[in-house]
Amino acid sequence: MERLGAALGGLAFVAAIFGGIVVLRVLTRALYAVIWFAETVATFAFALLIGYVVYRILLGTSDDPRRTR
View 1: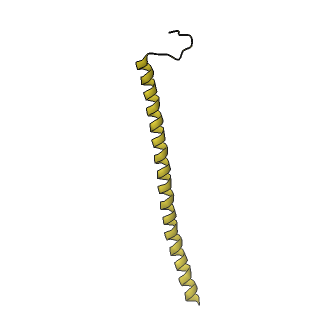
View 2: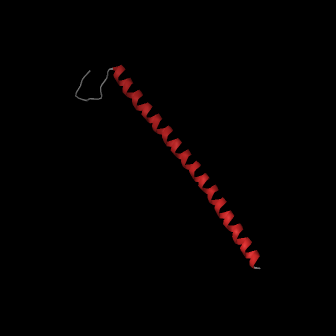
View 3: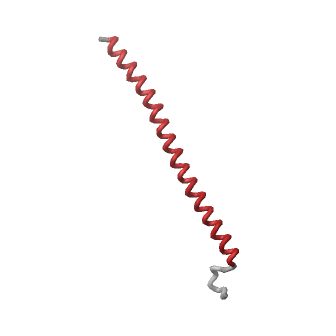
């Protein structure tokens, strides 16, 4: 009976280590996906901002209400 308990304890330890590695891998991949998505959104927003500034420069208009056209 002692051997059976020791074997079950060893098996539980192996499962905990393997499960921990799997959980860690899943979490890091999920975090990588979240960071990749945030980076994509930020890059798109930055491109929109630069595009808007270039558009305003090329169009030659101003948002300043004191300036009349």
